[in-house]
Length: 280
Image (cartoon, rainbow, N blue to C red; front, side):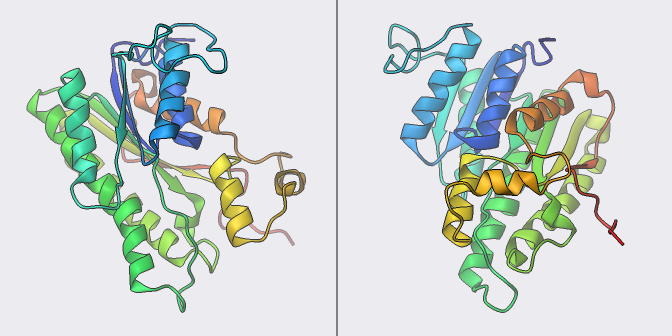
């Protein structure tokens, strides 16, 4: 532990599960002063809050123990925000509630995303709108609100957006997803350039195939995968495993921290496959 996030207030969309939760937990281990997490399920938010509280206090929370403090009281360092980022105004509200609780926002991670399937010829306008709303518009609005707070205080800040290797093109059944992530990559570079002299650093991670509970649901829902899909998938990977949320979370926290120096406007491929390289 290097205490990379000491004194920092962090907002993580999609922070109640999967990669987003791993990021929030990593930030807690690195000494974050305040952590706001966003999700749609109150039950998941309560479980995530308990996990983060445990890390902040160096405790092991037994199954069935109360959420929040060990005496059942809320932990003031953790804020769970229930929101549907696909709806107008919800993204901005998450930043406003973070600032209301902690007085400011120092770092933002946009990890929430829609990965439902659709090819060019069968994607409806409604499905396209869903992807754009969650994967592009919501990050746009959270970044807008967060940077507004940072610049109003003449304070430095950091933002990391979770992208996807599908931004480079993706599978045929990920047309709206690929489009939304490619749009977000352009926004990252635009915003990073616009606010470099404000000392607001904005970067993105193109993550590859990652082992999360959400991915398991996706595989079983859209690809008729059975319960042992993960083992079969990992055997076929160059490193013998899929991407791991805790490893990606460490990279995110590094980019959020001062240890990543002056890096801004970077879109980093975090994967074991190389775009544009081919066998044979």
